[in-house]
Amino acid sequence: MLNAKELVQWENGLSFNDIAARQGIRIRRHCRPTASLKEIEEELGAPLNILEKIIWDKEIEVAEGHAKKPLEEVIQAATKAPPSRDFYGALEAAYKRNGVPALIAEVKKASPSRGVLRENFNPVEIAQAYEKNGAACLSILTDEKYFQGSFDNLEKVRSSGVKCPLLCKEFVIDKWQIYNARSKGADAILLIAAVLPDLDIRKFLQICEELGMTALIEVHDEREMERVLKINGVKLIGINNRSLETFVVDTSNTKMLLEKHGDIIREKGILVVGESGLFTPDDVAYVQNAGVSAVLVGESLVKQECPGRAIVGLFGKELLH
Ligand SMILES: O=C(O)c1ccccc1NCC(=O)[C@H](O)[C@H](O)COP(=O)(O)O
Image 1 (tube, protein in one colour):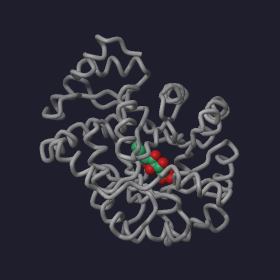
Image 2 (cartoon, rainbow, N blue to C red; image 1 turned 30 degrees about the horizontal axis):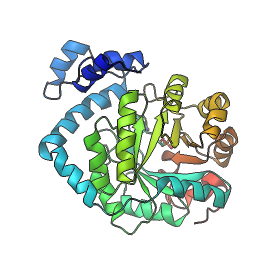
Image 3 (tube, rainbow, N blue to C red; image 1 turned 45 degrees about the horizontal axis):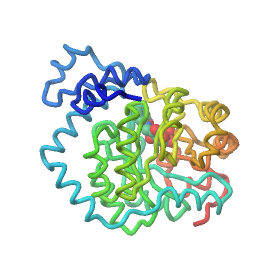
Image 4 (cartoon, rainbow, N blue to C red; image 1 turned 180 degrees about the vertical axis):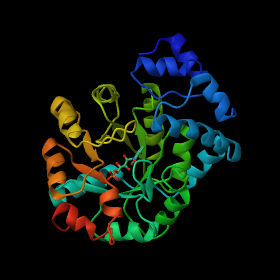
C-alpha cells in the first residue's frame, strides 16, 4: 500500500517509475509527452524492449488525444454512447453452452512479432464471420502504429450490426483512453499489469464499473498474478502466453500460473482467459484443462482464408450461439 506522501507524489506525476519499480514493473514512462525521442533517450537511454517503446509512443499519442479532445468532452461522449453489452456474461454463457472455452476472436491485421498477418483485411467482414461461427466476444486492436488497428475499425464493427460484446485492445495508460473507447462502442477494455501500477488498475476498474464496462486484466508472470489477485473488483484475468517484452510464446505459462493460483481464483469467482499462441484443438484442450473458461485468439484465425470457418478447425467442433 502507498502511504499518504507517496499518494500525493503519485497524483502529481512524480517518481512514477520508482513507485512502479517497487511493484516489479519494468516498463518505464518518460512522462515528457512534448519532448522529442532524442531528448527522452538522452535521459532514459533507448527503450528496453518493444513494450516499453509502445508505451513511450502511447504517452505522446494520449497527450495529443487530450489536446484534440479534452477529458470533459470524452466523458460526455462516453455517457452518451449506446449502453454497453455484457462482455463477462457473454463469456460465462458461451462456456456453459459449448463446454469448451468461450472464444474472444481477435480482429488483428498485424503485430510487432509477426508483421502483417493478413493483407486483404476487412475488419467488418472478419468480425461478422467470427460472430456467425460462434465467437462469444470480439477483440478489436485499436493501436495504429504497431498493429495497424484503429478506432475507426472499432466504430465500424460496432455499427455493422455485430452483436458480440467488443474488447478494445489497447495499451491503456490514462483514463482518457477508457472514456474514449466507450464513446467509440467498446464494452470491455484491456488493462496490462506489466504496464500499470496497482493504483492505476484500481482507478481504472472503478471507471469501468461506472461505465458498465468489463476490464480484462492481463498478467504474464507470477508477480503480476499475485498483485492482481490482491485487487478488489477483478472479475476477468487474462494470462498471456506471450511475453510482451521478448515475444516468446509458451502455453505452459497458463498451466503454471493456474497450478499455483487456481484455488484462490476459483474462490473469488474470477474467470480466466488464456491468451496467445493457440492454434489447434489440442492447444485449446490444454489451456481448458489448466482451468481457463475463455481463450483470446488472433493469428491462427486471421491468417486463414476464411477466418470464420477457421473457428471449427481451432475447436474441432462447431460453436453454438
Ligand atoms: O502479438 C504481438 O506480437 C504483441 C506484441 C506486443 C504486445 C502485444 C502483442 N500482442 C497482443 C496479444 O497478446 C495478442 O494479440 C492476443 O493475445 C492474440 O494472440 P495470437 O492468437 O497469438 O495472435
